[in-house]
Length: 392
Image 1 (cartoon, rainbow, N blue to C red):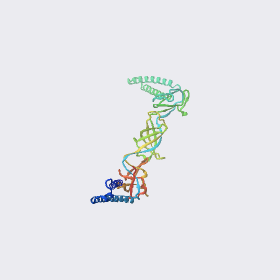
Image 2: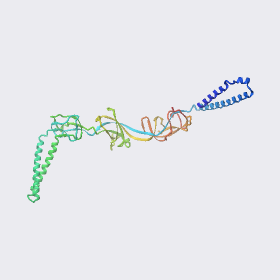
Image 3: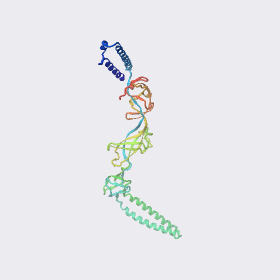
């Protein structure tokens, strides 16, 4: 259309130039020109008129064609191209640690010595406190002395018995006495060990709950220390059973801790093998690296688990999807589109998958490169002529 108007404009300028030139006007040619010159001018004007008539006929044809299509619905389209798609399951959980314990006394008595204070780092097996043993240490030494004598007696009786000297009863009595004394020593050692509170694992003394000189007793249920290890943190979340196949060990996870404003990339470490009948969920354990030591137990965490990924997914906005009376989903695509953006609407039934944000995956019904109708899709019918007006 623009090319036709441009050509017509140039032609009219040339015509005006020829008709109004400075060499010979039409009046001058009629007044003083020869018959041959007048015929030549007539022939030139006749050719110009033919060209002008042809241009006008083309313009009339285009205008009539455009006017006949004024009732064609105007739509916008989107070309579908494969792209990467990742779906995330959003959940919430609490940060926990398996090494967060209260240490209780195993025997009653006076707390003689507390060797640590709050915030101290301790090693596994380190002595944290001692309780008055009530003389058990002295009794243990006496038992050890008796055990040493019983061992010597037993070994001598054994050598004599092997040489057929002495009676069998003397040998058996020495052996029994020695074994009984050894057992008494072991029992006393085990009892004395209860007077010492040791660290069951390496970590940080988070709280010292009893002071030196206080009386402790296992029966009261009062703890002496809280010991925490912050190097092995994790988040445990409950996942609906419908995601059982999608959420598996090794799946990528994004953890955000609002209080710290920190995001952590990690992976699912373990999934539970039991479905809770109360809420139809299973537990998922996700490790949380804590290199800086800022993450504490019981912090709230937002968890995004990547339960589905597709490298070449076909994604469309949900607004382009319609449903019929039986719930089948369909979209319209533009087919047979010409150079002027005129085409036809074709209905396609589709099956959809998961959605993320403002996009939803189409599992079947569409092919890459097809134009799906966006705006105006609600006003068209199957096979109807449409005009595409996509913005540049």
